[in-house]
Image (cartoon, rainbow, N blue to C red; front, side, top):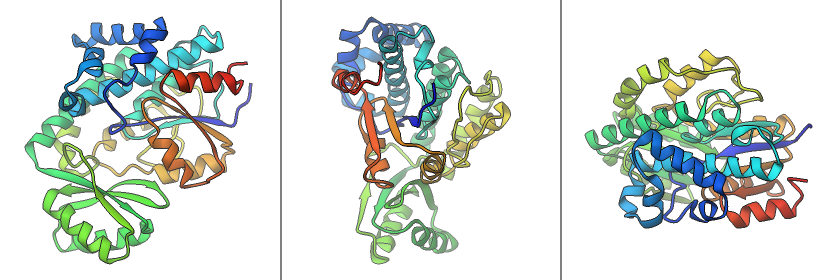
Length: 323
C-alpha cells in the first residue's frame, strides 16, 4: 500500500507529567512497552510520568527514555488498531520517517533499522552522557523567531569570530532557529539577534547546550556504544538530522548518530525534502504537538495529526486511517 504520509517523532522538550498514562490504562500494548522498559532499565519511568517530580522528568537522563518509550507505546497501539502483527507500527503505511534529535532513535526503530531494546539502552546512555556534559559546563539555548536562517548564520558567524562560544543548534522551520552554547555567549547572541530584527528570542528551559561543542564529552562517551550497535538498512526512507537528507547505509546512519549530539539539527532541510518527495500529510508519534507546530511553518494547509494520547488515536480512527 502506497502512502504520502510521513511518520515523525518528537525529541527532548516534548515531555510533560501525565504523558502516556491514558494510553497505558486503555491499551495493554502500551503498558507492555513501559513494563519492558522497566525490565531493561531497572527503573520505573511510568511512575515518574504519573507522580513526578517534574524536575526528575525534565532531567535529560529521564526525559530521553521517557519520550522514547512513549513513542514506542503509541506505535504498538497503532499496530493494534491496524490489526498488524508487525511490532512498533511497522505495518503502518508511510512515505518516509524522521525524528527530531532524540526522535531519530524512535524513527529508526519504526524503520526496522534498530531493535527496541538496543535503542532503549542507547537512548538511556545518551541521556546520562548528555546530563553529565550539562553538569560539567553551564550552557543554555534560545529560540530565535522571525529572522531568516541565513541572517541568523551571519550574526552567529560574526560572534563566533569574536570568540563567543555559541552556535546554531536547530534549523527548526523557516521562521525558527535555535542557538546554543555557553550561557553568557547565548545571552549576547540573543541581544545581537534581536537588534538584527528577530521578532522574538526565547530562552529555553533546558539543562544545557544541546547540539553544540559543549556536548563533545557526551559524544566521546556515547561513541563506543554506537560502534557496537547493530544497525540494518531501514525498510523505508529515513532522513538524517545531520545531513538533512535520506540515509540508507547502516554505517552512514551510525556516523550520523555519533555526530548528532553536538551538530545542528537540520529539520528544515528534512521537511523540505519530504515535501519534494510528495509528503501530503504527517503523523507525529509521541508526546505533545511540537512537530505539528513546526510543520505548519512550512505549509499551513499540510494535514498534520498528532498521536500521543487516546483522543489522538480516536481522531485517527474517525478519519479512517486504520480502515
